[in-house]
Length: 177
Image 1 (cartoon, one colour):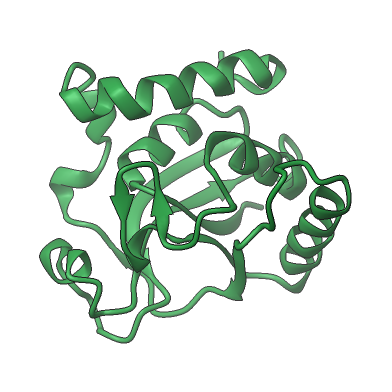
Image 2: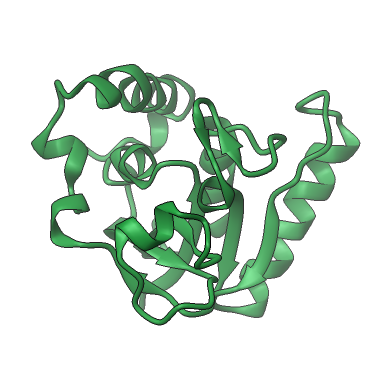
């Protein structure tokens, strides 16, 4: 039986590019969550007025990968210390967020954040929000599998490729065959 976990770690193209390569992740969908507007468009989300975050919705098999492992990857591939920003992407739609679908996922997320904070893993406070998943909708079709379809696009080369490389190097045991 699979579980669902939704993560906001900046541009969804780049986050999706990593998680499609993770063993035990059975589906990855780019979307928008935790805002006020019902079924917003990309253009609306980009204004920052809908309150939505660009996210990836992960379906995963807990017998193959744990929630903690998914979150360990998450904290390596993005900067959880910058409020409403990832690199040159600025706005509330790029905030660091973990949107859980079970109480256990929330416990794991909060415990890992506490552990990373106590160990001063990032040298600055972690600003990742941990909230129940709310008002999720899938992004438009052209956003799905964007990196896979556009590996040489400039933004993908500059941002997604380094994230994928870092994942593969740091978590070699979790890379899908």
